[in-house]
Length: 261
Image: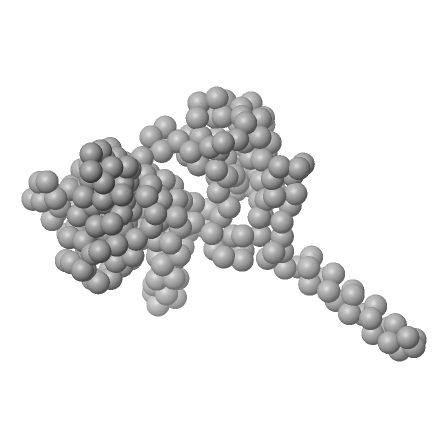
């Protein structure tokens, strides 16, 4: 290899290193032997990394949350329990704040200097029953952490369909960019909503059902078989996923709204 080739190679290597430092789009930070944090996910995809607490030791959840907080200024934890919340609180210093959502078992930890960027996106949320609220709250938390405003109405299922129309009218007057509809049992509510609104609908089946088609299977099948166009469906109890997709849609619309104003 000649001197010219070596010089070119060194220049290339320096450029590559500068690029990697500047663009941490594929950054993955290793934490001990049990976790790899995708700290670049939000820059790369517009979606924050969410730490699933189920199946992890309390100390694991606390240490992963602390590492994420140090690197990004925020940690979002889903499906936590009481002892995991205590572990997180015990390891997070006074420089940060911990918000715990009892119904959905979500935890959001932020450094005091962290500020969520407002996107202008608007995500509406409807639930068929009160028992569907924990999954709806997952979607709400994620959408808000992705910069959206949310507006929610609960217990408006088709068993008393007269309850539905005022909340739908409210969301349309509010100019919701997307509506997340959460339902168990036969999962009919998203189909009804998608049949009367002109915005995208995301159906979320929940496992709050029993008997034939229990644990959300009937609700999922019903939503997948829906004849209403303009509706997409996520997995059973997929509130986090629904909130992420809804916010991606709403953020695009919100950015356009802001540029046009």
